[in-house]
Image (cartoon, rainbow, N blue to C red; front, side, top):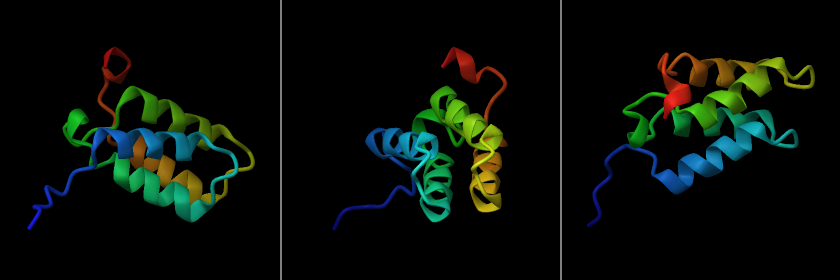
Length: 86
């Protein structure tokens, strides 16, 4: 039986970042993507630079609703100060 490390793999994290940046993604999709990114192992539980950028765009997008902005804020709250160096 395969074990579940409880962490998001790099391919899934990349897809999640794209989901956050996609203006056609639904609020539910963006919430799931933000959750997945918060569990990416390569960032040691922190949101990486690409995801932080996507989250920032979501927060500044006037078309984003409250759920989308909440998910993006959650992801950004887990961004290390040096995310731009990753």
